[in-house]
Length: 99
Image: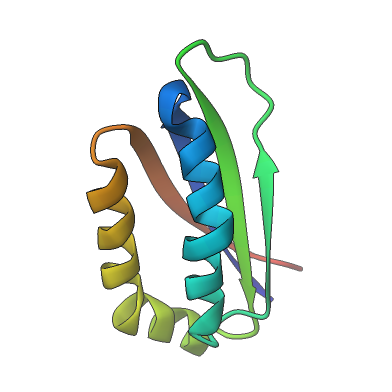
């Protein structure tokens, strides 16, 4: 099992809008690609004054499905996120393998 982890820190003043958009629009669009089996979202427990950090984990059954997502879907979905929230977030991605 492969976990595609996206860690995002969002500014406090857009947090509520971001969370609503992520759960109602973005994550469902990612899941509709058919590349992932399930997802989870978790709040990262750190004390930050300027934003909140989340880990969004998408699970897939193969590197082939992950690579298909990265090639065919990720650029457009990431662009929609960037266009909506511009300089109000930072994000990085990590690949994990469940043992």
